[in-house]
Image (cartoon, rainbow, N blue to C red; front, top):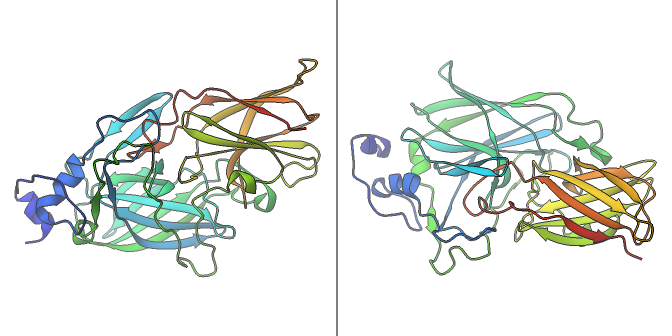
Length: 363
């Protein structure tokens, strides 16, 4: 009897899984009753467990590169404004399917809204838009829990719309049209059940920390760069550093670039790079604005939104072309909309209640 058949036959499951391959008597508990930290801070925290994941395959279409990954189904939180909604594992959920999407030349992870169709035996087995997600293990990716009735050969058709951010620098003019990739894979429930789930020591659960990112890449696509799931350290960003501030437990690094940079040919460029603490994962789907004031005259030099953009070395960030910014000017960055990306354990309580951040253009 296969493990999935044993579960459907009505096996009573108890306890939680520990490090090692899950057996039939542990699987359902991990999927549907995975421990959740009781006393969670309003910040990034160490979750109760860490799950392994694996890759079905990868493909390239133009500048887009895509890897299709999987793990067992697990809960996550969707975000609407300042509210979260917990999505529990459904009775029929078979796996958590994920896509990492990046620029094949530079490796930077791209902000898109991918559509997914799974075909099996000539029929459509699933069709949906994948959630934009933040995970301590996977980083910035796209995914959802799916229910698949049958094992066997599948084709994942992933539609990639134009990138939802301005492409700058060497990426300028790229990702303006939709592309589609197809990845064939073999769905076998035993592959899901054989993934490891590791419980984290209770003394560490809920502490201000995060599990490490999984390794990405490894030459997944010949001739393409491996995905880079992190953004550069603040001191590695181009331009004049304005410093780093923390709001809602997100870290935001700000820089000012002179006119003539790859970001803005004829004006200065104010660049803000939000990232998660501990792992430096770029934070997507935020609404940011900035106000620049001259201290001596209280003149407003700039007061408008910052636009999502993606650069081959900076990655996902938020910025705007500005002019007339001088040394000593005060820069206020305001979070108009907190990150709307869905969250896995450890991120669902962070990045809310975000207060404005103050920077000064150095002398």
